[in-house]
Length: 313
Image 1 (spheres, helix red, strand yellow):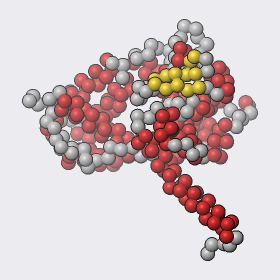
Image 2: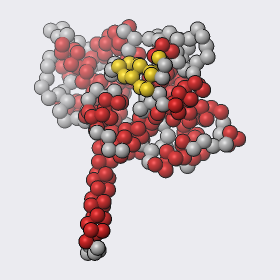
Image 3: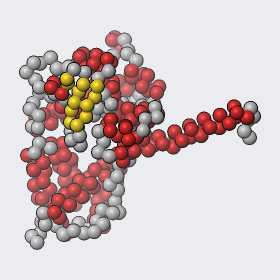
Image 4: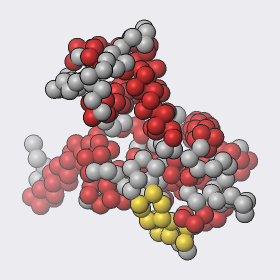
């Protein structure tokens, strides 16, 4: 078996992803490659040098650099995907349990979901004199994404005019490829009509992208739009006293946790959000599980107190 350099193989895989139009995944691969280079200090890294000890040291270095656990997991899962691909192509020797001692899961962030009071502040329209037009537009998009079952911003950006038929949007998720259909409520339709693309020559439903889908130009436009969206949401958060709470992720987490508190089964929530499995949905809901159990316990105790007519000591 020919000795294979991890960096050269990873660049080859990245180029293949770009060629297929998977620009988001290619971007993650590039970021992972840079993180490995920072840790290794040179491009002299063969697949045979990947040991469980090396992988663990890489994980530790990422944490020491200030990466949160989800970022660490993203880098390690990307490295694992590259390694598995190299094994499949006989570029690397299979090593059992190579990634067993490092974290490759997903940790939910409680702060990403808004509570009832936070939602009231966001959904209550402020006087026009108090809010800049770009911030108001970001607020409208935030609410629309929530109304469309926590639609991710990337899917909003790439929606096409022919995805809308009547009051139903049918689209394919950029992340998982799953096809979803959402029936627009009157509130969602009102926001859609307010901000929809008026350019008859553009195929996109909203004026977020201009370049052809699948091109690097379109991906760069999306990245710029996402940064601007989060910047405007941060400004809105400061105005509403919700600093560090509003982001493009908050709509999705808020919709999921709101559905959970409305007694909707996690399986239905998973289907509604187009998750690859219910396990993914549970990472959204796990931080709220104990709180809901405590609330149920409080209800039971209050019921018993009412039933017996006596305080419980």
